[in-house]
Image 1: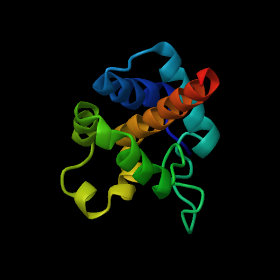
Image 2: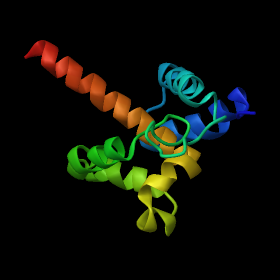
Image 3: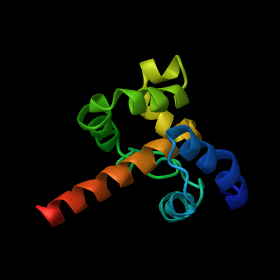
Image 4: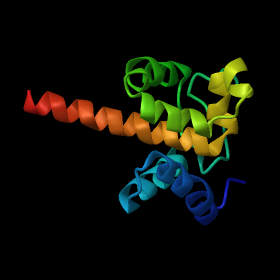
Length: 127
């Protein structure tokens, strides 16, 4: 049994996007659909060896690390907003666990991964 879609939308996705200053109905619907496709709205948050990623959006530890090292490291204000969504203690011990246990944080990360990919694709097209 997964998470109720309306509650996920209103209580998790919308607040995550709002915290990032990224409110849009398109972004909300995208993340809800992504969670539905990747994890059946939270039915499965991890496989046995985590090879398919973690959490609602099946984000891999490698993608998570790359987002922090190659994107957020150069956007300190945005990084601060994202870090504010993470749990204070657990994030320092095992940051990738936040992808499975902290729905608001993982929603923010999923949106930023998507936004970054779209920006990179656009930049390739205009280059």
